[in-house]
Each structure stands twice: as C-alpha cells, then as structure tokens.
Length: 307
Image 1 (cartoon, rainbow, N blue to C red):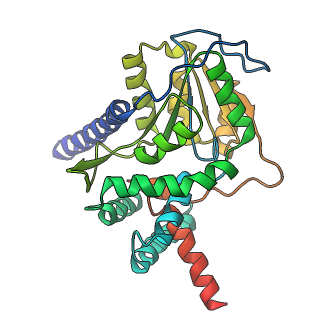
Image 2: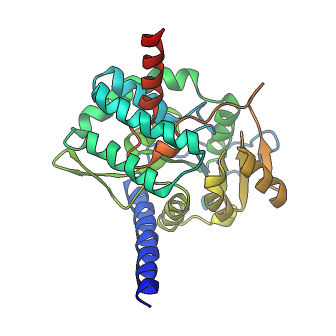
C-alpha cells in the first residue's frame, strides 16, 4: 500500500507539473498583432474566413523551421561565449547518450534539463533576448519551410488567430512568432527574479501533454472552440495537441506520426525533398533547451581539431 501511495503521489506530481507548464505558457503568451483582414483562402486548407472562435496552432521544429530552434540557439550562444567549452562538452556527452540509446529516458532528460538550467541561472533575461534577436535574424530568413509559411499566412488571411506552440524557451517562441506575423506564442517558461533566470522552470518543459494543456488553457482564455481550430506538427510527441482540435494536420512527419495519421485519416503534407532531415537535439529540448544545438557544435569542433 505504501508503494501504491508513493506511485499515486508521483503520478499526481507529474500531472500537476504538466498542467502548471501549460498554464504558465498560456499566461506568458501575448497577442502581438491584430488579426489580418478576412480574405478567401486558396488551396485545400480552407479556414473559415472571419471565424473568431477558430485559431491555428503550429509546432516549430521541422514544422515551421528546418531543424530545431534550440539547435540554432545553442550554437549561437556558444559562439557568443554564453557558456564555456567545458559546459559544452559535458552536455555533448549527454546528447551522445540520448542518440545512442535512441529513446527519451526520463532520468537522462532530467539530467540534461538540470544541466541547461544550471548554466543559465543568474544570467540576465535581457541579454538572452538580445542574443536571440541576433541569432534568429539569418535563421528565419533561410530555414522557414515555404509550404508551412503559406499555411500560416492562409489562416491569418482568413482573419483567424495563429499561435506558435513549442518546447523552445518562451523568449525564442515570441521572437519567431513575431517575425512570422503570428498572433503570439506558447513556449517553455523559465522562472525569473529581478530580471535574471533562477535556474528553475515554471512547471516543466512545454512538451507532449504539456503542449495540449497550454492549448486548452489558451482556448479557455481566448474563448476558442477547439473543434473549429487547426493544429500542425511533425512529431508523434504532439499527438495530444493534434487530437484536441477538429482539424489536425501532419507536416513533414516522423514515422510514428505518419502511421498514426494514416490510421486516423489525418491530412499529411511533406515539404521535404530527398532523404528525411535528421532530427537534431530533440531529447535535449528538456528544460530551457539552450544547449541542444551546442552539443552538436561541440562534436563538430572536436572533429575539426582531430582532423
């Protein structure tokens, strides 16, 4: 019985953190632009013009961007000496373990999350926001999938609100959403005090069920009817979010999501050509996620030094 009680408490704690992460993301989301004038969309994605209770929710990595936002952030932070090579190599070792095992082990994710948060603890939020502006200026010009960008614009042109929903830090999510003309963004929320990061998250990472919780919280706040909303993602991790809405769309899917979409009859759009792009740094999206890309950068630096 004692073991059962401990298990029940653990499950409740996980559920509470998931809900808190979703609520925090919804609270941190800020509408940035007024909805566009309603115009009739073209093509087979046909959002209803002027439907104020409908919205669209877009995942970021491999759905809007080629690759992972935290990869580009991590590389940019390392190049700007936001953290040391020693930190980089330690995280690279963790990332290599993830890729070797090919699965997201909860204990490994927790270790990676704690490492990432420890490195940003005490750093000024304004500094990270400024660095994000510099990093993502060229990234957004070169790495956005044109097909997904057209879908974003189609919903905006129909007068609907369009939200980015990502495990990336809220600071990154807001920037990407703003540059793409989206309404706002839901991202992982890091706790701050007096303009500095504390090294803790509010709830947890906005991933899997937490994304669904954030969308539900935002829908309540914005008085949206999820049955009239659309969601777009590439990953099976986002099945909870996709299952919430009346119009789920699968973009550049991984194998598990493609199979699920086929079974459910969901629409699939694949904008990739040639071999499927490698998914970089997905397990290390845990926590703030600032080092996922840096791990790949460390491996590249090591290889160049050996050569």
